[in-house]
Length: 150
View 1 (cartoon, rainbow, N blue to C red):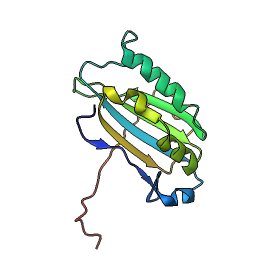
View 2: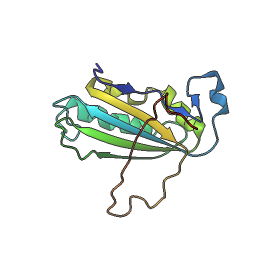
View 3: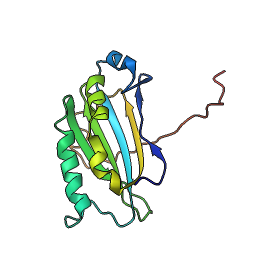
View 4: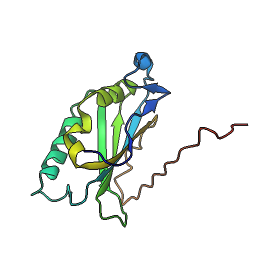
């Protein structure tokens, strides 16, 4: 059961995947950026844990969704004792992203997850991004609804 903050309904071009306007999603590449914080004691790197088996099945399942192009994931370097991972999923278009959002997606591992951040952006990752010993930094922020744009 999710006990923390859940930010699990992303929008693409101000259109939710399950809205009536979803057929108007852009036909450009989309990058899903998903951040999981697992419950204490869950270690998806430990093959003897059921969470690890489900994690591998989750990754395989996502790759079968139409529009899927590439998936990268890595643990988050943090002082927290709870394991965290960032998942980057490249979709060929808004339609592929919608298919993922409408699918079983990460429901296989929901019971092991404490917090989720599920975002997306119209972006194509460079093909050689992970051919090097790279560090990818992702910064997330949200403006207050009361913030003036003037």
